[in-house]
Image (cartoon, rainbow, N blue to C red; front, side):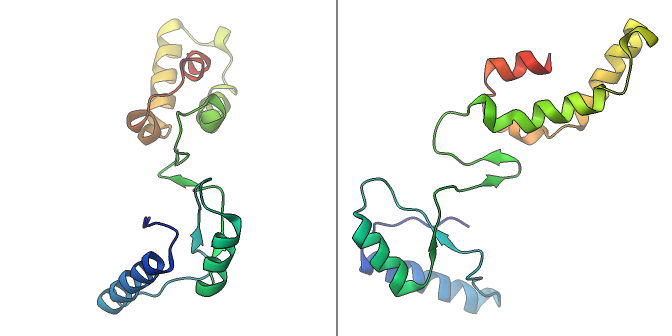
Length: 135
């Protein structure tokens, strides 16, 4: 879950209030180990440190991935999708191209690409160089 707010105590109190209400309704609890804050570059370092100290959250600079898609806040780069290229490559490597007919190679490639994580490929534009590597 991602919650957004300005780096002010009043906004943090609002976020905490929302989390508490969510926990009360759902029966779930906020995991301190999994909860983190990311500050924009415009937030003063001292203000960020105070907010983290008050609420006990740790800071992160990386949002991670959601369903395999990197959440970077910028245009995707080839490094963000290197795992897709490696996955396709590792599944095709064991097969020798000279041992299969052209139709066999096409069928193999289709089945391998169909088994790769398609969600990242349909939710964001993969860089052309990444598509070229897969090709």
